[in-house]
Image (cartoon, rainbow, N blue to C red; front, side, top):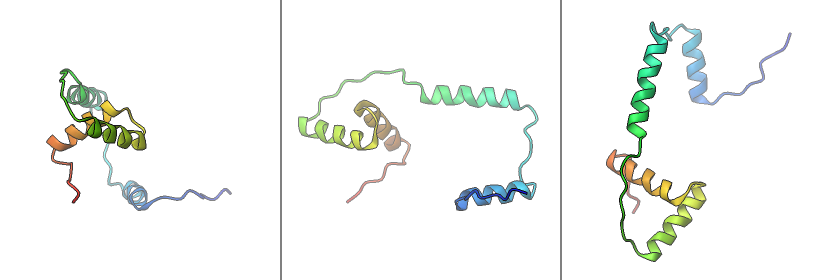
Length: 94
């Protein structure tokens, strides 16, 4: 008999425990619910406006460096940062 050698982090262990305890319930109209959530996500994440801004060369260089460390294009990094700011999830470091 093969033993389970998978290692779980704390969150994964909690999910497994909840599943084994029957905490999860099936969604009655899964396909309908899935389509509605996909549509909401598409509408939320859709980039439908363009803006132009002027910033200093120094700031742009620093943004590009941070984006490179994150492994994303700098314009994506700027867009993500602005989204986090307006969503209240961007915290200022002092």
